[in-house]
Length: 271
Ligand code: HPA
Image (cartoon, rainbow, N blue to C red; front, side, top):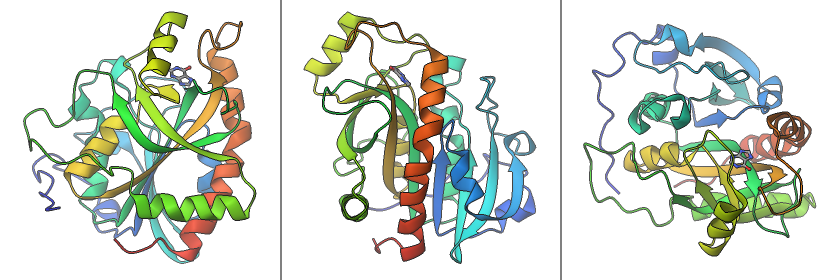
């Protein structure tokens, strides 16, 4: 599909080390996945605050920065932390870091998030690779255009095949399923969770789809992974806590970090 360029007037002052970097793969690391960065050789760090035009997060644990790094010689750009719709940013602002990363020409974008599991066969502490999504926010980062681009196969089948096979060889429980994105910031009611299950969702969260839509609009391939941090409300008879979500995420992080590390060291398939 043809890839329109990101608007060049959007980031007037990108620090030179970032502007001149040519990552092979870009990754957005959700809260708790910092351990992946520790496996990489860091080249530079640029706080989001140093890039005019990027929105800033106010959520603890989500402070943002770009890290330029290599892993097994592969240049990677990590976006550590993201902003959310529930913080009051527009969908377009939320996808700003993806436009910036896409302008540096990566061959793929890997997204990670925390999500509640809706599928009784997918347990907290396990990972789900997104096969598709439901955007239930009623907004899009592409308001204003481009319009009418194709969203089938947004989570690239050839990337999914690589991760599926690597996970199988490691006997890792990597599920695949549909991620429903809701606006938040509150967790769902049990009735909302029943609705989401009826709609065909396997997991629910408050991020990722704007980034995937933006990447798709720019012709960048996407793979995305949800850390299933909790049973969604009402699936079991216990209230949800943010602390539980953060704690489960920390423990599961190393499993995905090591899968990503192997995939990137081996090299992702060409588009
Ligand atoms: N619902 C929405 N977002 C989430 C959840 C959840 O249960 N867990 C982690 N992020």
